[in-house]
Image (tube, rainbow, N blue to C red; front, side):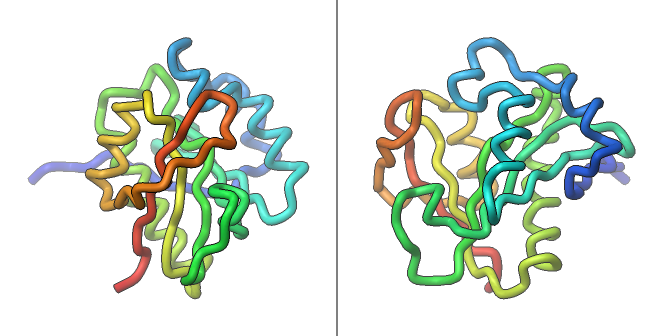
Length: 165
């Protein structure tokens, strides 16, 4: 029997902040994600933003945030109750081990519990981020065909995934 790594997600607590500040991505990924200190500061200043940690056991290995108002992700409203996913990343030391897909599965499970009325999860991914696009497609996100041009690093594909059947 294959033993999956213990990957789970949790809200960022003060006790995890110092460990989170050590997380980073490869230099070529900074255009897509940014620096963790900036991400945490931005999340703390935005109403409706939920900073989250990705844990391998008790060790932080990644970060993302949930936006309760998906409009801030795509600059438009959604027909169904939709959440936004922003700043998703796995630390560079943990990349390439399949943790991204496992983390997304943990996120979907967490959202079903913490946001049971949400029907969809939306995100934007830079058109140059081919690795990210492939990961999100494998996780069930569908490209809407819309490009969001509000990002700092060029056009981004708007992807949406249903959270419930």
